[in-house]
Length: 348
Image 1 (cartoon, helix red, strand yellow):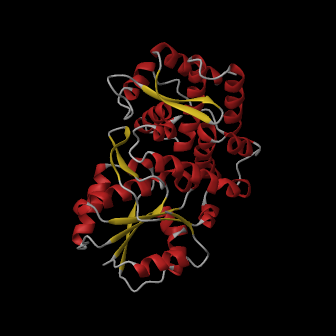
Image 2 (cartoon, rainbow, N blue to C red):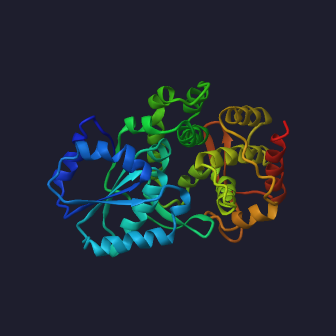
Image 3 (cartoon, rainbow, N blue to C red):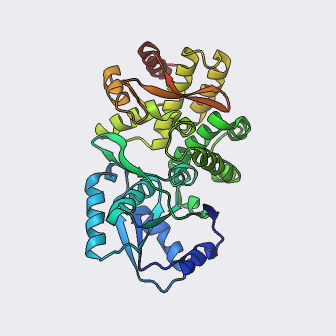
């Protein structure tokens, strides 16, 4: 259940009063500790004791070492099965915090309070928890719903523009796979600023939640939410491994451009639609340099994608603006062609 918080956080306080938690653990990184935790603590009304758990910010921290440290801290602080974990942060915090809670003592309750646009519209919704393994994204995790998701849009005022733009990529994806009108409303913006974005956040959250409600464990239609992520995750992983990380939304935007061209090569969309979509995405996002990555490096990661079956690379590709197919198996020639297409954009 997603709840938009009022300025007094009354819905959160009502939730805490209704439940019988033994203790609260609030997971933050240094950014949400500074900018968001004071707001939460200033409005949270509870007699329960609480502890603050802080980790360093960044995708590179979303690993088994950090998870193990958090399990050890919970153990040392004698967290029991009635404890509550509050994940206050962006996608890394909600992914990892959910995973730690879902696996500690075989599962304790957690809630998500997303603080970034990416997390509000995507990462905090849907019950996917996880950590990275080596340089493979979200390779270890669970399907576990949070007890609740509480959204406070004013937290977005703390974000730098790059983080806001990163989350905007997931909103654009929602439009492309499921809602043409949503896509058209978003691309009318010359620049994805807060004032323009806020009226469309609930639509994006609703699209994500509706898909998840139909297919929680990603057996079919939920796979459409991976549009742009198959190639995007591979590039994001390689950049991280190279020590030159890119924001998730920038990688997804790159992936959507390549996979839109791939959809054209696979005769799923027209050349006219492909060009229009790609030009809109290029308007918002910087070029991600993949010239150092060989096709075989990218394919190595594509072969390990979680959606694959029977030794085949499965893609989710748009079949028009507002529609998407899943489990689409592409020729390696066309996949390589989509990567070459993206590389050439740097010279256009």
